Image (cartoon, rainbow, N blue to C red):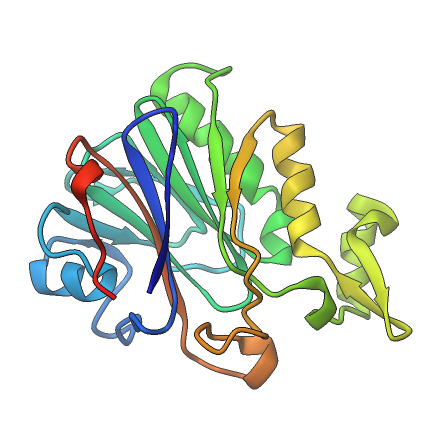
Length: 242
């Protein structure tokens, strides 16, 4: 199954997949740029149309890389990817963290947003990178937010809470049964608003409460679901299997 959103500002789409399209084991899908048709179809559920598939080695950072035809510019370690290329799918893997895709005229991007990355500025760096790629610091950027753990399921205490509170104050937290819980969705909304980015699609499915989604916080799962963004003139008739 996939949730699809077609961006309004160009021919580009994001797909948030659930665990009915399982992400391959990491040794079969190494970080970097892949041109293997069989693996591309396995990851995306799309047979034909996608020339390449890119993912970075995610490490809860604010690092964003540009994807070119033959490489990812800079180290493969990153939590955001951007490209101006048609038919190049940019992917992130998530369980409870938030996948956020971006589109502007001439480029797309995607970011893996956990609390560390959000505090560190992954959203700002992603928007900056996509605007620099198209050469317009004020380019209109549209965002789509994928499934992630909800505030009711995300108890958040200790030193990590102090780090988030230092930047956002109490606005990021909710009290649930006398415990402090972090609202990742609220942080994403706040950051995008500050950046002048419209979040025109949000999937509110909770990874911990939805049987078809993987959750690390809920059951310690090592499994992840894939989200990917791609642009190209062929997208209008595109269907995803499942």
